[in-house]
Amino acid sequence: MYTQSLDIPGNVAPLDADANSPEQARFDAVMAADGKIEPQDWMPDAYRKTLVRQISQHAHSEIVGMLPEGNWITRAP
Image 1 (cartoon, rainbow, N blue to C red):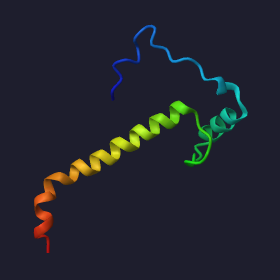
Image 2 (cartoon, helix red, strand yellow):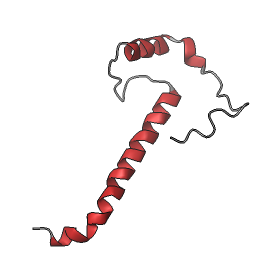
Image 3 (cartoon, rainbow, N blue to C red):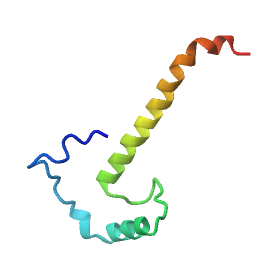
Image 4 (spheres, rainbow, N blue to C red):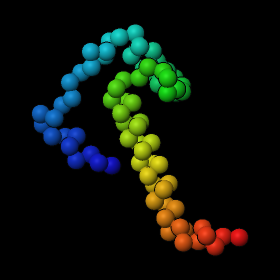
């Protein structure tokens, strides 16, 4: 989904300065172990940005999915 610009030459994201940090190592270990990452836990900025985008899209689909039933709300038993 929305991957048009992933393979454009020269569109390479710079490596994070935190790529070799202890926080990154812990994050990678938790992910490799299929563990949970909580909102207050450290995570790479790109990972957090992607999560926020996915959560926003999910919330939007929940709201838009309800729109066809909007006319029935005032007449519901």
